[in-house]
Image (cartoon, rainbow, N blue to C red; front, side):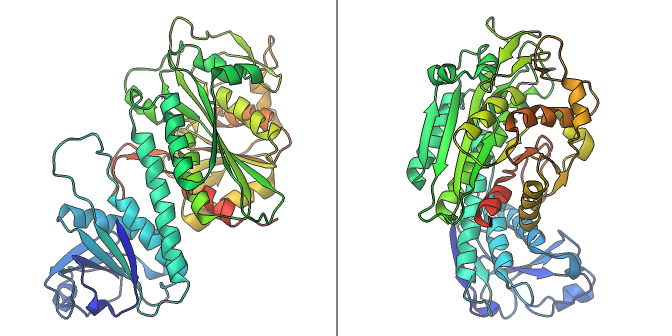
Length: 482
């Protein structure tokens, strides 16, 4: 998609459609809209669309009056959603070029970036493997800001980088497990790294054995597909901080549950169990282009969890790289096992701050539904950094408790800890398990099981992966201050 910024009046912009936000209680008199407004057809309700053909006084072929809701609640996150929903509406009308008008107080850099992100994210479709020639994609998108300031050019570029990286994550997450094995996920990361100038190292089975990553290898041993640990490194041209941010993402390319096998209903969605890892690869893609003055390394442990004849069994005891022993009471609690070794390795390589993201527990969905990502941390300042970044990017996250009392549920008479507790507080005990391997390093765990993908389409997004939390992670790195 070609992205441009225009500072000319909206009436002069030639496009297939010009998107004009309309707010509740405000009347839009331009482009021949008055009769529709007077008739009550244009009320400004959120996601209400009225398409005007051959609009009066406009060079655009159509004007889309896009309901934006209440003006005092309209922020950059709402701008992103509005543009994405508008693009999806226009694509159904076979419109191939669009523009959006930014006016009034909504002409700042955050709004310009969000508008571009909305267009690119809204244009995404999960139909890569469909045949036929009926696919529609937006060819060009223009941000129209007649009174735009000089910083809008950089904002538009930033929005394009962020959205394209989020879509990269979504496309990777959409791949079925027969086409995206652990080693193929590693190959995709290596190709991206070469394109963006990142260092990429892929540790394979022999390397993992030498490092003593028994927790990761225990999960992988039931599959014919070999495991891999992807390491992506970004080093700034001039570091302004002594901090070293480690991003750790769960990369289970398919999760049957292993011997503790899952029900067959909905199991096809377990291709999404690598969304955390995909998000880390997408975030590194954006970080490589935006170049924050902070060292960032991503660690993505990739495995396939299968119930083969060599699969680990409930009751097995494995030794993690840190030396801790783990009694595997449930082989479907595998994500925390592979993350345990990846977190320990990140600490060994000198990461001073850690963030992990994983589709880890169904319990977090019970607690927060599909609206908020659960946030757990051993360090209040680090937690607050992540929450600030999430708020700035419109990715909703909610802090969860991590009190020491919850560790009681992970006691084992046979090993240092068990990999599951009771059914109560399952998301918390999973985070407590990970905390054992982050140790005293400032660390945040993002449980994205409820937000990594959509079971049903939304006006601004199709069914499938969302690409969260790419924008939060990139904002965290680019806004980092000691």
